Image (cartoon, rainbow, N blue to C red; front, side, top):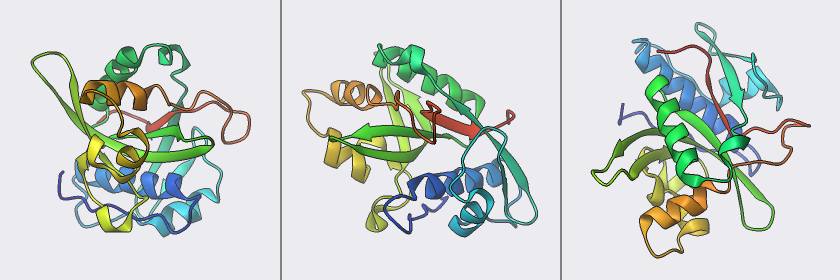
Length: 188
């Protein structure tokens, strides 16, 4: 699934829509629906800025429903957060959307698409980041625009990952809900 193109967000606050469009496009491939596509516009029409569990995403032919998960219990341990993300990726071959904070007040959503596990037990995650139209597509998590610009400091890649995963949203977002990941409901 490495050849799934990235989708650029159209405005500064629409990363959730762009990430969800990539997620749905990847799921079409998992479902062997190669004659269909999902676009940013499909998602914006489906949600109207109202993301929530059970919300249906549709491209006119196929419909997927989203499930949101808090993961607050993993917040204190970036390693356990990474283990949980890897477990979700094992269940959801299309990937997951990961929502995080950066800087003083920034929030951003990316698709974490897959991973490999190194012999020492650390992870190499791959992701799609919609925040840079010049760098769309699947790449190593640490090579995505938002990761490099916000989490590039650290002594080792593992320390950078720990810093990144420690910033999972754990405060209210999307109204009064606390979310940090979402994925398409149902395993594939």
